[in-house]
Image 1 (cartoon, helix red, strand yellow):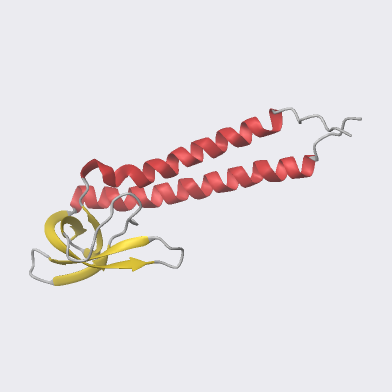
Image 2 (cartoon, one colour):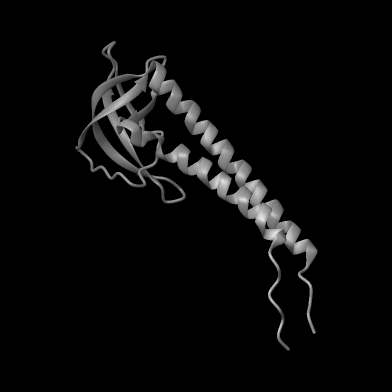
Length: 144
């Protein structure tokens, strides 16, 4: 005897994939906007990693200390969490900051700073493809 997949659970899976894809798009858009602001209007200066901050979800970010071109000393947290690149307290780094808001800062990793938005957007595409393919996949036969 063959049973059919539960249409409600299949619909819930599809809706969950679309919801997560939208969250990925929102996250990618937010990071892209921040990084575009830094790329267009940012200033690059030397900085020191003043500490490592561990967030509530376990993500680490570097606390950076630098002096702006105007001579103001700033301590701010990197907007991008440390997932691939690891820094230690006392490391010297180059940072990009936004002069109107010097707390908008990230370690200057060249093109690598775009990795996080790319991952967000790739996740959105993957989840959308999964949502489209999932309902078309035949259910495995049930053995009794």
